Amino acid sequence: MDFVIKFVKPKILITIKIDSMKTLKFTIVALFVSAMSFAQVAQTAKKAITQEVKPTKLSEIKWTEETHDFGEIEKGKPVSYEFTFTNTTNQTILLTNVKASCGCTATNYTKTPVKPGETGTVTATYNAAAPGNFHKTVTVTTNEEGAAPKVLIIKGKVKKPETEEKSILLK
Image (tube, rainbow, N blue to C red; front, side):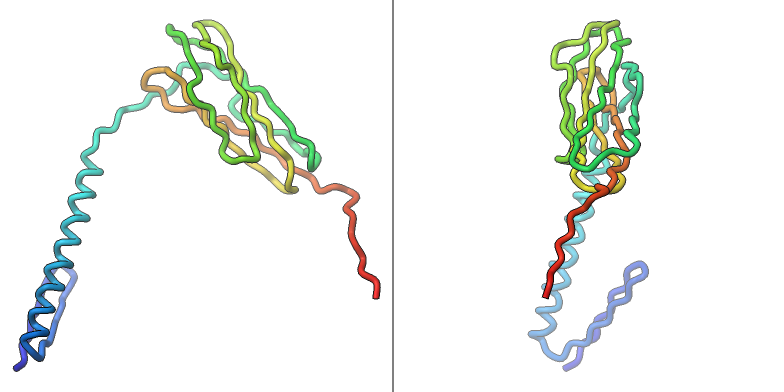
């Protein structure tokens, strides 16, 4: 007994030749399970699309500098830069989270509330452990309503030490 089933979907043509009733039942169950898994993916995608996204605005906090280039620095000697900001909003600002892009960069920042017109700081310290160029970010989040986090950048080049010790194996 031979059954031939053809399924036509947009851009997909499936032809299945079935030799027995047992194979027919198995094929129908497999197609049903496949169809249900695609249905679940579509529902999940629809939920993701319909989630409400709160609009963000640019922060009204004024930074004196958003990027700092250290230039060439020595390997093994950490370097720091202090970013300064002025609260130009009408509300008291609190830095709620300051996060470096990796473990090679440490941060310190003003932890007390910054009143309108006052200044605060975020210090980024880079541990120059590996030679080569670096480009690191520090993300600053505040309590300013609807404001997007501020990304500060430190960059530079760690130069190789001039006197690298090399071991020589003698025979």
